[in-house]
Length: 265
Image (tube, rainbow, N blue to C red; front, side, top):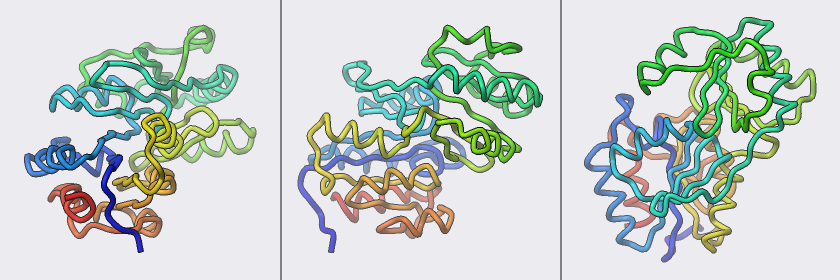
């Protein structure tokens, strides 16, 4: 039986887990995070969000934890404002996928650390503009991005066509779903689990000292490298099936605190 341990690395997803549906963190959960740190726990926020999107949350709550974003492709030490790890995509893979999306008139998002491009405008793009107060670069030709360092690609809506193209053409990338009806595409072997493993190794945490909390399919890889994987109560059944514990409470009523109280406090 898995048991509580002293020194711990706690990895927590943002959307659908730590964040409510209104994209807020409750005072109850914030207090739980504070108490966890006081109980010899190192916290890592692990998200599929891009860096600047994740920072809108990080800066709002003045977190100085570790941050793993782009589903494992970038790791930051927020206290030192230092980059620990970065894995960009292979440009030939990027160009193949973006070329396909341009031809299909499919608006895929193209992200670097500070770059945001799209191959077209749809409601998802407009929502992103509104949420982050930033305008995208409209990419009409892959020559516009071929000299850039691209970390990931994100499609929203009708994602099956993109996935089918990747599989059919044997493009050597990693892809997952971070929220419903999206596809997140990263370099080969990049997952939340790989990012968490890299951070744990750097900080000298053993597998039995890692606890992870998440709610969606991209969190399953995080569970696999953890001693204890916790699925929030609002998770899909497949995600729950991969977890060691399922919270009774959802992301809207402090499911994260439930996990912290069970395994840390």
